[in-house]
Amino acid sequence: MSRASHICLMATYNEWMNAKIYEAARSLPDDELSTDRKAFFGSILGTLNHLVAGDTVWLQRFARHPANYLALQPILQLPAPASLNHLLYSNIRELSAQRVWLDQLIVEWSRSIAEADLDHVLKYANMKGVPADKNFYALVMHFFNHQTHHRGQVTTLLSQAGVDVGDTDLVALIPSEHHP
Image 1 (cartoon, rainbow, N blue to C red):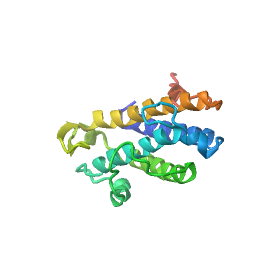
Image 2 (tube, one colour; image 1 turned 45 degrees about the horizontal axis):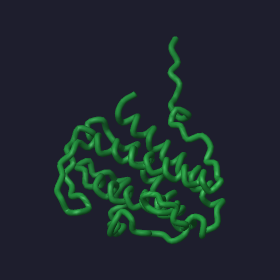
Image 3 (cartoon, one colour; image 1 turned 90 degrees about the horizontal axis):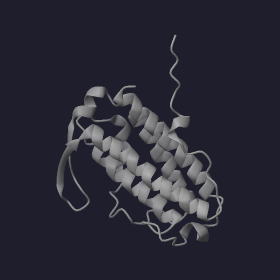
Image 4 (cartoon, rainbow, N blue to C red; image 1 turned 180 degrees about the horizontal axis):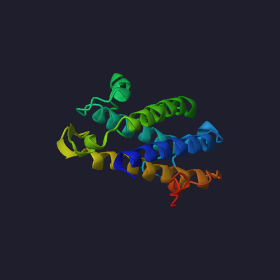
């Protein structure tokens, strides 16, 4: 599997897992979603907001890649999140709508990445304004790893609230290899 194909797989996995998590989260009342459960970002809603904020920040950086990804142009219209713990949406319904939009954008963008794009060094500034020059492919892998990390926290928080998300393994989406 090429690196570009792997990115498409990760985008599909991201969309699949977010759909499962949001469906599970919508089964809880708003006050349960906002309860501080002592996670990095407090609540289930806080952690899901963090993922939307983080994805927005990274996608805005990726939109400045010299490949000029058309699929990412809409993300540049959004204001940059002020911080990664800012509550962008106060309820699961509005947050869910933004998540669906982001996931569709991520899938479309992933399909437009060429293998050669992945060797580029992306120049950006972190949230504190510190400049960085890093390998684009490594940053994209970080982007997907960050999502997986925090979704793992959300599945734990949901489980503690009595909600089972079900299967979360990437292996469920990895295509089988058929040999003659």
